[in-house]
Length: 150
Image (cartoon, rainbow, N blue to C red; front, side, top):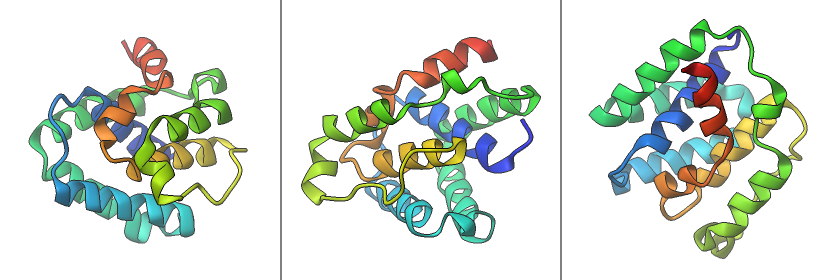
């Protein structure tokens, strides 16, 4: 894949979906900050958001192991078919399935239109849920993507 942001975020989502243990409160707080940053200032990806995400990932050995596994596979992939990406409907369903996200009243500020925005909005919704690792497991597109990755 040619986009570093895509590879990092997708590898993180795939790794998060593999976790059997819940994230710590500190990790949840960091993930919420990442989601807020993606929502408010997606252009700050390289300078702020990505380093914060990578730091969070490396502090969790199991998450880090899965992340590197998927990141290396994604880097070998030329492109991801658009039908494998989360749809606006899947993001809305994900958002409405987690009462923590609704209770707080936060919703992504932008419409799900482009590839990056679809992925960003997925991370934003997951970051604002009570149990991000369980919310990530509700996604269907990572399973399809895992099949392509082998």
